[in-house]
Length: 382
Ligand code: P1T
Picture 1 (cartoon, rainbow, N blue to C red):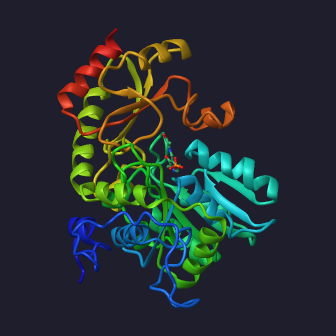
Picture 2 (picture 1 turned 45 degrees about the vertical axis):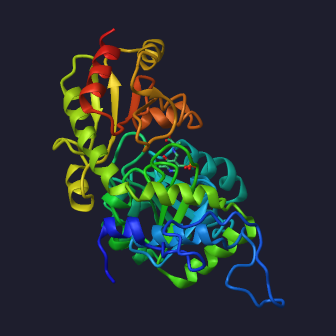
Picture 3 (picture 1 turned 180 degrees about the vertical axis):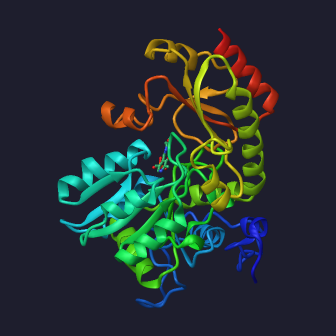
């Protein structure tokens, strides 16, 4: 059946337990499974490769992204690592110049020394992606909206470039979540998620995922998933299944609060610049409108005339927002990208794309918007 999003979030992959009728997927806290004779088993052999609780989650993730197969990993970085293992020395990757700091770090510090070549371009401009393609390009890796300056990449336009160049095309869909955007429908081959964020939704699990349609690609990725073993345990899979049941409700609230905060901050005298794709003068607004359901709960701001010390002082004044890395949970977080989440990117490279010392990133939670605005008012005003 072709169910809609909320029905899939609550039911996909989650039949009542066949042995007991339990309505919620049990936590199959087992590393191994009995075999009647070698090879004669019920589809589960060893939990690094397969576990029923994780399988329920993977099927649900696949359904939410309109894909055939989901793979869950012990972190978003483990999921990214699994894709990069498909490459060999001399292969080239075209990717964005504004990425999560950990993605930049695995590209430049782990895979570049192994002979993989990374070209960092402005992925909001499909022509910049096209211009960076060579015969050796094997992967296009796009984050949209980007972390932390919320640049938009036109997923469908880049899909055409990927197809014409025979390169695999992966989209990091963490900031949008599958509720707002489905890259496989727009021509991507792989969707990657830091499940830690909106999918988990409660800041209590670190997890990653890949979702694909192609059988051969799934087999290749599953090989590394099982061989390298960065797979999560059943307790975490259960927590994420539980979190996903309210993804649609949370995302609507994140978007509504994100809009209220962005509009409040837009003309604030202490703000020099604000990044939120819902503004009609945001350079990616039209692309966001075309490929996303709404504009999300992430808002980044540049403080007017603040040096690092003043930025730190303001970031430490919040009472409802918590100063912390990560995003996408029900609680509002504030982050200083230059020294926290993007600290592994050299100053020159990060400043070029706007990750300056006076940039703060807000992950707007689902508390009462009035309380969040009052908190911003007192912290910025002090
Ligand atoms: O933290 P982990 O689950 O390993 O996911 C890494 C990751 C990948 N892609 C994007 C777009 C991300 O934002 C992240 C993690 N980001 C943070 C921890 C952060 O605060 O930005």
